[in-house]
Length: 150
Image (tube, rainbow, N blue to C red; front, side, top):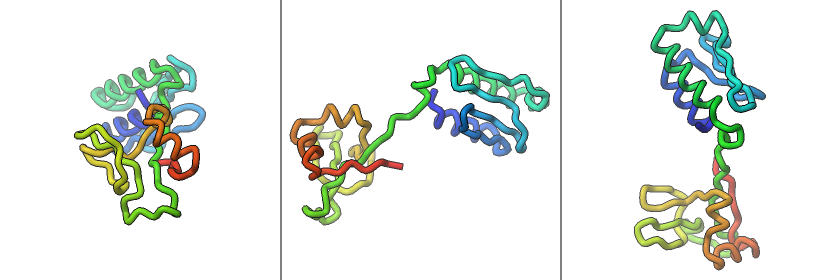
């Protein structure tokens, strides 16, 4: 399980739950720590009286999410960064300055930055490394500039 996925699922359980991603993942209910997941695999603690005071369904669901995250190897918990590939300003682009992968025709093209079900506009480093030579050459010559997607 990814940390971001864990955070989203915890928020869905109860709006009084907050997650703090520090050296360890702390889950708080009304500002009081009820659980933490440590930086090492299987490092998990819910031995807090505040955890025991949660309702039975919330307690079970939160426990299961915490257990799943703790069981995930630490390096697999982190989402791989994604990048958009933008045409450098020298070439302009008339709002068609980002590399898109057209999933229907399985080809790369320049278009805007809007990702849809048919077009992918952000790519991981490993996906970029698998792109055709022409695109990677454009990156190496700074014709295409990787931008971190937030």
